[in-house]
Image (cartoon, rainbow over all chains, first blue to last red; front, side, top):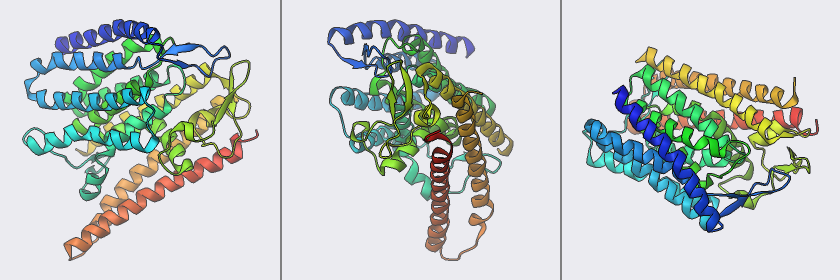
Length: 334
Length: 78
């Protein structure tokens, strides 16, 4: 198993690494670029390059479908979920969708998993989530209501925190690593496979997006990666572990949603931060702007972009450790 | 210590606190709420899910309030 996984991981890593370069060139050619507003010189960076992560991820998983026939329906469902979320993101990258429409559309990424549960109950059934210390939770009705949000929630939360260079790949690498360790602790084979391939794919993308970014992920990358994390949580039954691993993303999304009272596109409200001529990000001080994680960390004295990224990574390391502790507490109970 | 790092550590403390509360809430729901016996199955389902939903909403509200308090006290205008 270890050799097959390593080969698939390596293929995922290499294909993402090579594809990102070519996709970036293509995006430059068609002038699909975004402005890096946090740099004083405001450079134009090719966007929607996160699609390479999704292609690398799909390639790696497809390679394993034949090797692990027991998990084939689950892996195909995982791929379908991620592709739906990425397509929605890609559409949003070219034609800007409203915040509510984006959230509503990402809810549809849950459909492949719902269909699998209905058509192949022998392979996958929605179970009771496992929680620390007490084991399986006896809540069933409430769980059904939150199920669609287990995909749409992380997808949008990861997208909402993808505001600085390298934040998306760095934080999701740590989250995937914590899911991988948790899967090992809880002996979830599917969780190990999916999180390892996602991790490899993200590592292949990281050199391009890390500060100073040469490419932007776009919504197709961030929504796809978020949906992948949500799908791993659902299919490998790591719901609570994933919830804790994504605490910084959920925290940031929750602050914004609670502040603007609904799902609104970031263009619809004032910017929470501003950038000085020297490239220092500071709190905008605008009382009508939402309180975001970047605004909380930057404060009124401000900080450079890479410094804020480092601080978000510290938060993510702590969240990932909490996620592993959560998995350990679950393993004690079950 | 730098202001940004100090605030990051404060935010992570809030995060750890919320994590502890979340686990405590799960235990409370499982050990207390789900053990309250109600004869009628519909009333029982409504009670259990309604109370659980309410408690999770209260946790989220608490999280929001604590963040707002922190922002106004330690971040804004410092």
